[in-house]
Length: 313
Length: 307
Image 1 (tube, each protein chain N blue to C red):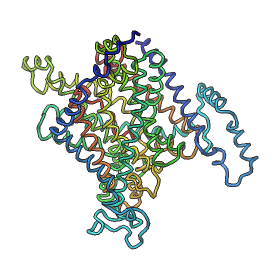
Image 2 (spheres, rainbow over the protein chains, first blue to last red):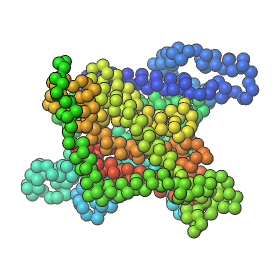
Image 3 (cartoon, rainbow over the protein chains, first blue to last red):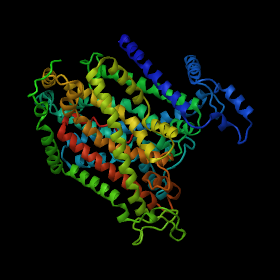
Image 4 (tube, rainbow over the protein chains, first blue to last red):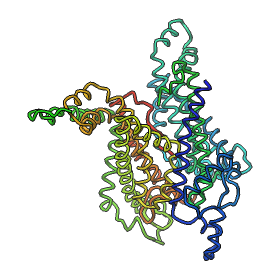
């Protein structure tokens, strides 16, 4: 087990290196001079030069990259050019907001997605099944930011029952709409996958055996079928957490949510490489870690895999 | 490798009826599947609207500034109302369809060119090429999709062509991974060995024997991808880094509408609906294709909205 984990962690190193290299090169060829964005218009060349020197911007890219990676190994993510604060501090301010929102969205996704999927599979071809299939198909095609705006109009402007912007005092009411918007597409996918996985399992021999034994239908579905049907579902949900944090930019923009997606997005526009780099790197770490956790839990749930790799790639 | 005798006509051997029957099969099944045919109709309407935009709505109504027509609700004159500059929303939707169609088709085509080539190379050659290509693809998967698109757009600058490049640059990795797996599964077939035995070279084996048999999942994925590309364009334009005004884009229209949510909600209803219905068309066709071509792929589809 520990050998497996060690191997997986080693495999992550080239990915992390690749990601850092690509972001670094991207930020390097980005048009615009970060030093120029720090000073007022018409600053003297000497001032610009000293700023470049202070941030190491006058060195060639590989020197900057090497220095960055060296600092990174010591846990130093650098300093934001724009906010003049350590990148790690900025991330500590914003990551919790993103993770909390993503966790709420994930809970919605898991609960509603699985329940809808199971109902739709068990009551196949019923009215409920058609309803679930229809609404998941529509949600899959839904532009998240439009869905978010519709929620704002209906719950915020028309009925006035929920706040539509920011985090306020951090009470649960501020989470409802952004979490629903963020979870929408993922919930639809979870429901679809649960449904097809359930349908597959229900036709297996051991389900027929369980029924033949005289078990109640409830027991057959909950104890025998669901347990096996959930394996692929758990994979998807586990991997979604990373996606929910990283891709929340649109939801965060619509709801003015102070999350990390928005910080990275603004940093790209404002040419603040250390923030882009640090923010994205942490995302990638989370993503890789989740991937690993999913694989390990997968191996526990399905002993046939024995760490040879995930069955569904 | 031994040279073939002249009378051995490779063209003739390669004449597999499969290509034509597959095409017919696709059309027949799509017609049978109601949801998929609805999707096809949506796509057909979209393409027609994009082509005949000048006939349907004059361009001058979609751009410019009309002080007397500002924020008019839907009426006989303006069936979808007007926006904050007095522009006709229906005309803007009609002209905006051009952006969506162009981005959808060209971005996926761009991704396909790179992705199929890389996937074939990785799957067929294996070894060093495989490792290099797939590890590069891993880096692309580790990136949040929408962030990657924003980053590429910032470098290239806004504009329709750059949106196409940005999406294609991200999309190739997904296509390559899918096609590689499919190539790996196909290349062990006897007919590939047979083709090699009669002296076909790598290029020929890939193009004539592997590609037609390994392409199925990619076809399904591509249909889905066009939807993804259209949503991504809208998202980029919504964030202000996509297509630039005055060119009407559905994403921009939604972005404009945010300031007028309570005063003029029709500004946001129609562009969003246009995106939803269009993407739905592609999703339904993709679903239909998948059910017909390869039911095992169920649940394979990527999230359409990667943002």
